[in-house]
Length: 185
DNA sequence: ATGAAGATCCGG
DNA sequence: CGGATCTTCATT
Image (cartoon, rainbow, N blue to C red; front, side, top):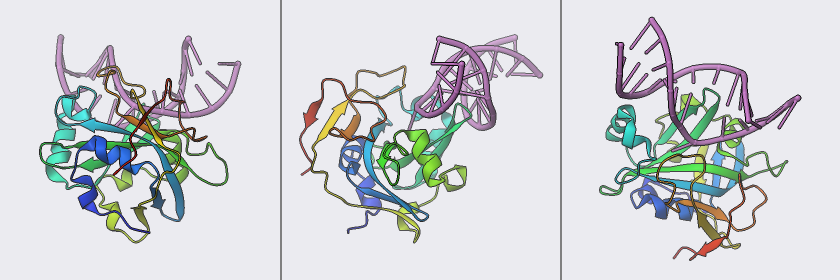
């Protein structure tokens, strides 16, 4: 399998998010097939942390493409994101769900998958793609990829920047009126 | 200092 | 549907 390197994350966040569906995430002894992601853009996206969090803008300035951006949400759940730095197209990809053994819905949500993998703040800022015990490997999603509005945000709800594997049992939330997007190139 | 909001999840 | 439980940020 082909290991993804930082170059993968030097493109448009929506492209990165879409192509990550079907790839396999490895993290300290566990693996999961990514079945749901969301893209967040530095420019023109009011839902992105960069829009309203100075600390996030600092993080982006000080880290390179492919770095893990991990934060605690609601004081309870760790969110696992990957930094995208393509110049005009900086942003993040949030990993929202993975298929994993043994229980199909063990990784069916952004907070659930970090708990499953043991991902927490200690990984924040790490270049995990290049580490021995962590990384992402390219896969091919044969079920088709669908897109829709992002989940749980209050702004920019119109952007269809959530991507998922069609009919996966591990989606955090089912897609409504699934509009299949073209498979990757 | 203090308060509000937040890319969620579980249980009643 | 409310509570958990912590960080960031704006306001006092």
